[in-house]
Image (tube, rainbow, N blue to C red):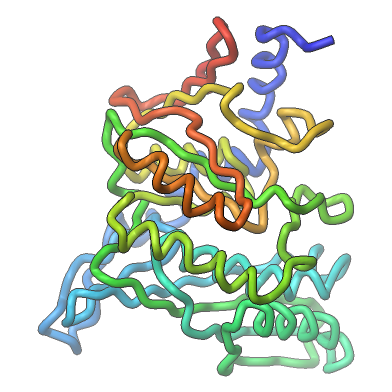
Length: 320
């Protein structure tokens, strides 16, 4: 028996207080000391520009009109201890996703690793190297420090985008909202991570990396956001924050794996998942690009002028 719409939305309302969602709703606090933008380096005076803060990567304008993309991700100690291989793998994978979300292609990563000794880093390194090989993105250096009492890992990445960049700052009212997730996977152990990466052929992963780049350079969209720890709902709020817009979604338009609750799916962290906004006439073209690789792409809602997230299910509405 299907749960009624009111009950479904009442359950979803409880996610407002989930730590991962709150972190994304309040994400601007993490860069408030810098402001909303910074000037690019003074040493390249032919392309000095403002670098906006709040995107999946920094996008630094180059002299030829392209963009150098630069990002970093840190892994918490608990994850490094409980599952060192997957922590290492994820550190590389999520950085690549950040580059993709900007319509770019990854160039290389570096790592910073702290541990008691070399033995304590073996599985972490195995995970990082596997991701590096699978995605075809080299680890070109970094920093390692032994004889520490705690474990810590961060990975940085550079990439490149053409002048046709994707950003989370460009969504405007009237555009449609698309959700693309590779659902050919499963949850990784007891984590909220939907893993469609580690069991996928490297050749397929490398082709998937190119899809947002294709969308950007075919000028089908100028807006994207990588779905991260806050899941679909937290990521929508980040898009709302940077574009200063609202969003209305129809829950019944979101495809989810069978037997997974809405509350679990809406805050899951997929290995391959993106939001895009676009003009109505580009929806079918974007869907076709993902369909070639059997990646689910749903038209889930639209961008609004009023800065709030509305979730609809049949005739019921929830302001989230």
